[in-house]
Length: 206
Length: 206
DNA sequence: AGTATAAGTAAGTATTCGCTTGCAAAGATA
DNA sequence: TATCTTTGCAAGCGAATACTTACTTATACT
Picture (cartoon, rainbow over the protein chains, first blue to last red):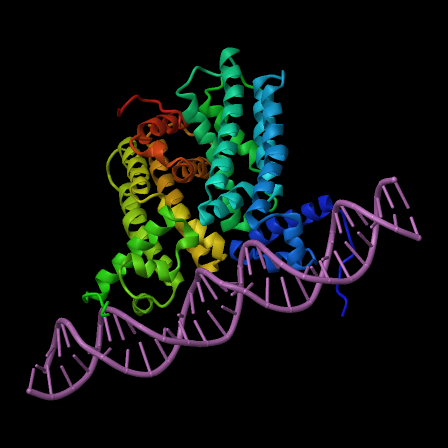
């Protein structure tokens, strides 16, 4: 009984493994993320998994790198744009929430694993990802206040803390009531709340 | 070698086991919450754990009941008081955040376990706890709007969603940067933000 | 005093876990 | 064609897992 799978370059295999990892965590739960089950999902032997990743933790750290590239870096670029603060804020929030929706709230999945393992490097990495989001958010808000679009408000870090609650809570509720988030678009509604929080002086953007 | 521990009634043992459970999760991580390790923490044999709880999951479900009694019910009672909405809001928020601080963000610990196990009953229970918090929060806000203390605002469920983000994000950051939350009191700062969100018409409360 | 119940133990069980090893062979390069 | 690197597999490792079983004994009650 020959069951060897056709060969593929490591770069592709790594992507497949990471994709399967996220699918297992969000669909079957973290407990079912065994190397055996993972191997079955990508139709490879268990040993081959370890050909492409040194350890199970390495897979998740690699996923974190992806999140940094696919989520945090774009967010940072949005924050650094020259467009008006209102425009950037909308793009920032909607991109953020949309990414998490498309990726099953990947950051919370990663947090769950980091908390489970109590892995210092993973927790540190996650803390850094969250901090970056808040920093970039604050850049936009600061610009808005400087240009008089928004009122000089309260502590900036309190506002960015409150902002961070939006994607986090959304990710958690996606796990608790998955069916609710299939179609609904949170962004505009939340955007209005944030506007109110910022004491918008001009009316603009839908 | 006799190693039997002195006897104690089941009600006390159950409390000890639950306390040790939370301590292990928050200090050593969920992974180290084995029945063996748990038994060591309460200085009992592993078999005795199962004398007091049918299964490991039962321990965590029992902790959820405690949260319902110690957190959700008091929150509900605060919401139903006859005091002014501003007074209730402050008490509500500060009690909520203080409880989570004292208990290492127990709800997030429970969520982590529920997500790990992908346990339907635990996820359902957690969803219910969160829903109740939002409902009771909305009771206060509705009163405030009815009595003219706060402006008629946007969708109430959006506001309560944003509120829920505060305790959740705080719990997560407590896990990511434990040292930061040792002394700092979040409540007044966050309270001011929520006031702004509600478009307070009168000035009151510190 | 006698007895039922509740609280304790040690030593298992079968199963799963992440990971390693030794070897085969496909595919690229020369 | 010859060689070297990469990708693959099957088999097995020791350790850990949640939970059970068979048995003891402290404690409370009649």
